[in-house]
Image (cartoon, rainbow over all chains, first blue to last red; front, side):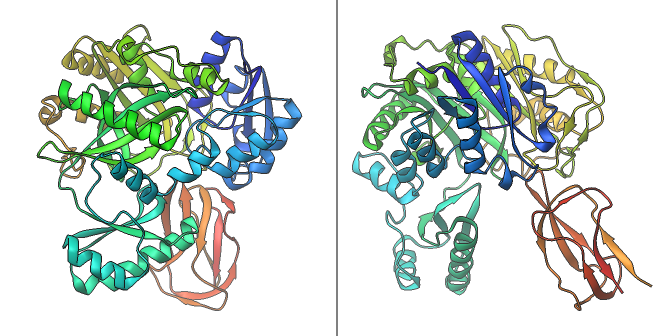
Length: 447
Length: 71
């Protein structure tokens, strides 16, 4: 079992992971950059260690600095959280090469699934639907021309190793082909160090539905239900919920079967998420793997009563899952609102000092994950996500009402937050009826 | 008289788009600041020649930090 866990991240997720460690009797090490030296969770951890200046390249993205902190504090395991180095296989390898435990999938799996074409090939090999397009990367402009002839316009050119919504561009006609190809390959080279790309057809008005799963090193894999994450802007999720209003029992069983097949074919171990798109006709397509704990994992925890971080730590320690698919209890409805430090009208960032905080009561219906405190500062150097408010109740409508009430009582002064936008979404009739897709917020009239 | 182009948001300098000696015009983007992973453009309020570039990529800046000096 893990004795001392270093949490290689910042913000609310550090506090979240410490909670489970306390329950399990695992000691914790929190790391911090100069601008996080007064963070609230540093006191919750057993130890803390400064890893460098505010600039994330020199601290939270600095593999050497974090490995040094691990050695200095004699931590025997690392949990990467989400973002930063969570999906960086070189970091995972560096942890493992020091004899420590990496709380995540094996580095070799992380390296392989970074390639979207690899994942598409795996999926095609086990009869899981993928978005129509090429299964391999394109050798050049000539191959792209041939692919477009086969799949037609409009087509999407995507980077094989892209991420965060970067390096995805639409090609509408022959005239744009060369220009888009050159731009996407240039972005790939600059931002990701790889210019390889492939072609996919566009899926009109899709819904983003993902399956949370956990797999142990003995071949057991259990799906913990889906999450509906279609309410997003600029590929950033805002509201997540489970179950999805459009996933019935048959569809869920299909997605679970696909997820188990894919997880086994990839040799996956640990907690992970497979993202799927649902087209307007109800067809599902496998999209990509998130080889880490996700921001929205509390939705699944509220729905199933499971502690996903605990399962991660147990699996990383070599323990079996101790759970069959039939053991899974899914009850009621869970919904999460992400609160960002942004202007709700313009989406401009709003860093600054938090003056007053007032939160709704937390109980079996309401959970709040955050790292805010009065007098604390929301830094301009990091992600704008400052809190997640999660509501659970017996029905979707009741859960929405719970969340609405909680958000009305969630008050932060000194910075702007997206709470007013969250409330507008929850009060929207189309949203309440479950009638939305990933373009929902584009058409959304906030005023 | 020299004027400066200042940061309107805190964050990290993502890109500097001008060099010393460049002629800039009013409304031209001279620096891009990464604030909470958002790229924000800093535009020059005046025409002028770049006398001095005060920041480089990944520098930390506050609201009002001078970035560029114009002649």
